[in-house]
Length: 116
Image (cartoon, rainbow, N blue to C red; front, side, top):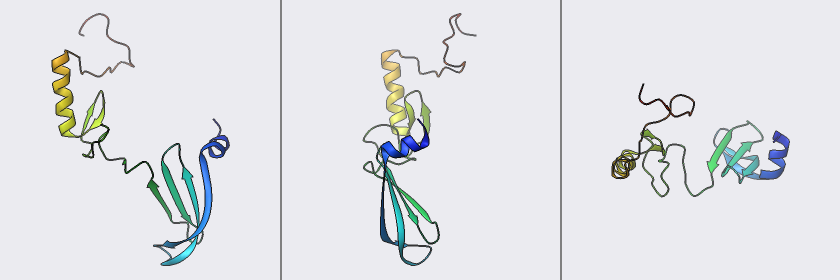
């Protein structure tokens, strides 16, 4: 999808006076809300200072990929980038179900000839 089409379909734009931390006063801001990516950007019309906030209920780039968990991302697993507590639970789940937790490292093609 071309950038213009994406903007047309997913981004709403408003303008309002807001406090700018760089200009140290209220200035004219362009507010871009991207509902598809759950974020809002506020751009100061005077200095260009941009502030991006997430609008999906507090999800964060640094928090665990497990739904309803707010721990920090610490361990990469086949189920995502998760905190140590969730990684421990996943490890236990893998062991209980006999599921192989190894990642495919050859472009996603399982090794059909057994272990190398």
